[in-house]
Length: 122
Image (cartoon, rainbow, N blue to C red):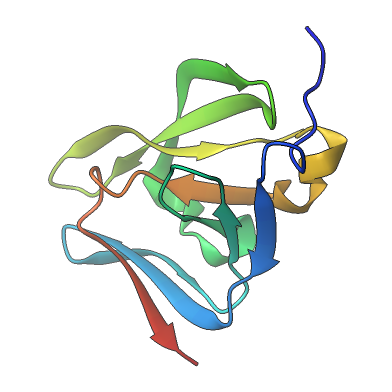
């Protein structure tokens, strides 16, 4: 399958100037001032948080995998809070296509599977 150019599709990645916090069941799963925001036509913005700013002890690697013609192969994680497991709530392009290299080492969260993804000025 050919790699499609993200720029041609209108996909952009930029540093988010805000603090990004992700919470589930009252727990802070991610807290970052180094998040990247990905914008693509017709879709909501997606926050990509560096792994170092995510509580990886709460994540369980899933067997789920998907493919995007612009970004590459995605891996998934579930979130374990102690009260429950939120299945496949997190994804990452661990080895993204060259156009998307900036998101390597970052994780994104499904807004409908976490309690909050909040942005606040730093």
